[in-house]
Amino acid sequence: MTSLVRSFRGTDWVLLLCIVAVALLGIITIKPFPSGEEGYFFSRQIIWLILGLAVFFASLAIDWNFLKTNSIFLFFLYLVLLGFLFMLIFTAPSIRGATSWYRVYSLSIEPVELMKIALVLLFAKYFSKRHIEIARFFHIFVSGTYVLLPIGLVLIQPDFGSAMVLAALWLGMALAGGIKIKHLLMLFFLGVLAFAILWNFVFASYQKDRIISFLYPQNDIRGSGYHALQSMIAVGSGEILGKGIGYGTQSRLEFLPENETDFIFASFAEEWGFLGVVILFFFFSVILWRILRAGIYAESNFEKLYAAGLAVLLFFQSLIHIGMNIGVLPITGLGFPFLSYGGSSMLSLFLAVGILQSFYIRKKGIFMGSEEKYKEGVLGV
Image 1 (cartoon, rainbow, N blue to C red):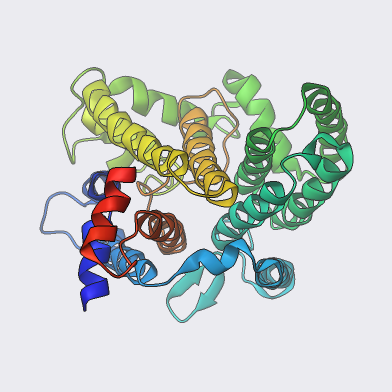
Image 2 (cartoon, rainbow, N blue to C red):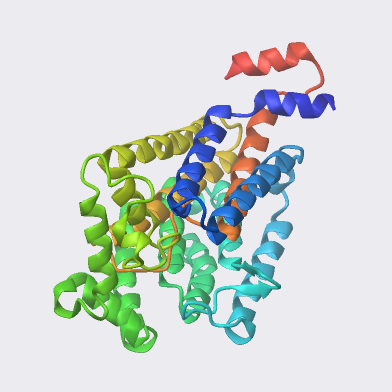
């Protein structure tokens, strides 16, 4: 009981409250209006938020410091999730044109969300042990192999949005780990080559249409460019103060598809306007700041890189989501962290933040066994 009380005292409540604020903004945005209507996504997202908070506080009770030294556990976790991604291709039903979810009764589980967190941990471990050797291109190649395997499986599903996030995650953590500029340029040319191969041999015709419609959306506004056009209309029509909660015509009249997941930012911007978007960005910026702050005050390179990786994951996923909603990136099936509907994403992200907070409160000395040491740890920050 004492440990539980001290864990609550050491929790970064600013971080947690901002996460809950973003989640509540998303819940309000997907709430059906008038209030008498039954809201499937609305009620389930409330449940996911409650479960996410339970996962967060449960993870505080676990001492995750064993991850710093147990490479076998992280590699085993990586292989298990890789196996799930592989089996998805052959066993999972097609949902919204992709085999990205396992169906368990009425629940849909998306393994790639856990893979994102597993890769953050794996790369934090890999780069923290090789912060000097990272100058060798060999280690860049090996770490790149870790991410290329899940990227390939995710593209086959196909889930182009998650593949982009995984690639950005690896690049961001490699930069944080100390990659050289010349190696970065080499990777850029390899990326161009990989894109050419993907375009000619991997991408499905509809994925090519999405990219082409991104470049020339006006060419096929009734076909592949329709979603991009409707999303841009929704964002622009919000103007300064928005149309009001429940009065978004693009989302409520279903001109905007998947408005609770892939296009929730456009739906939010239409109803809340520019002012609402500023509020959303404020909360999300504080989340990123508090995560990076925890990394700055961390005791080990592993913790620092883990915090950096988590911030990179959240930043790039939100950036890609916003980009496709405002017409500057191709349309991909990717949600906004904590804002979009989805249990797999909500629970995995709360788990990831809980792991970070577990590192942080133990660094401060909350579980050191005495009030004096606790105060010493706090003052030491």
